Image (cartoon, rainbow, N blue to C red; front, side, top):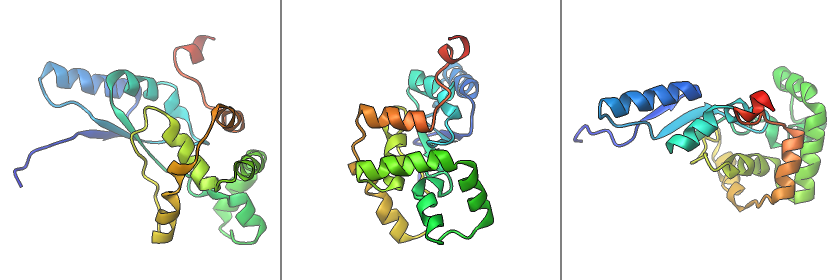
Length: 177
């Protein structure tokens, strides 16, 4: 190994952190950031407010982690109804998001797609996203996740997902309008 750095990434930076890092790298003629890894999924969309616009402007790719929201977006409501979910914290999260999960899982059935595939496809639909960390714990889960790119989400499906799991919008419009 030559000890050369090919790519530089950050994790859990705010939009202004990324901008400062890029500015400092440019001023010193250093290699700049290529990617940012952050929590991002249908249920947790805070990065859309400032981070995603900053990444897009700076040409940096987003690599979301937990795109299935710790299993909540994998059909958890249906699994719980079948008695397959017994973990208390998961049952609490299902209870907290029951209305959204009912609408989400119904939409997935209408689309004829697995809920996990729809959740991954929605995250991958964001132009700032380069790839995602799925967090699969078994080879079966990993194999299943590979079906996500085949899910086509048209404009209507995206709009319905955004109504079920609303995001914050992008700054500055989200602040003022």
